[in-house]
Image (cartoon, rainbow, N blue to C red; front, side):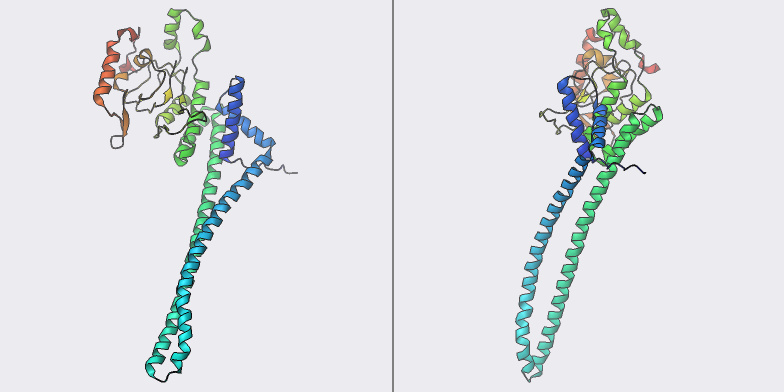
Length: 363
């Protein structure tokens, strides 16, 4: 017997349930990440397919209600036009018998012209009805098209998340770039995708938890001993850095601005040139040897002078008031003087200079 195939999980419903698991995990203090929450939500719906059915039943009702409203408005306009067009022909119909009864040629000719006018009016009404039918069909096709696109995005998103959880490096990289493509095709899902990628980075490139237990002199040398980031982590950071929107308008349920959480991650040697790090939490992150040329650091949180100076070409990054220059395809300082003052301030702070600076030109 062929097993019954489980229904597809709508992306919006999947996100809502995953967020519920996230809130529960946060309240209980359990460890985990967004990918685990996503998988738990998937397992929940595999055991409760009726929840998907209930959601799908509500969605057509909402779309149908909006469609009926549009149809009623169109019908109302049609009735008004038809009423105005029909009043005049009816009046003419009442005059036709009298016109044909007259013996003069001009009256009969006028009566024939009236009949032709009425026929033309009826043809115009038929054309209007056909046009309204085409408009209704157009709206229906658009609704079906959006529904199909949403289903395809849901399938692509689920597939990409599964790829990221794979143990094969090339499969993980493919999943990461698939998520980037989905973020471009569906801007409303961009932030969810960024959270998935930052969760992957925190899980696969963390700062060792025992670093605080080391002696101060050993703790200072630890960032230099950490390995460089893996190729999949570099790919995830590249996708995050290439995002166009800053998502400043998007907020969490607690009305706090969303932050890209890259705290306590090992970003040693990563290429962040021209990366958009606005609203990224880099508290405790290891930027030793990372490339920051033309990167947007404006709005990045948790950065201290020691972190910044441990990176390569930090003095060529944008520290104040950055905007994206579409023609040059790079980040530019909105206030160059203020940005330069920030760079000079960092240079004057000799206490934050790294004890063993990296020769970036040899990397």
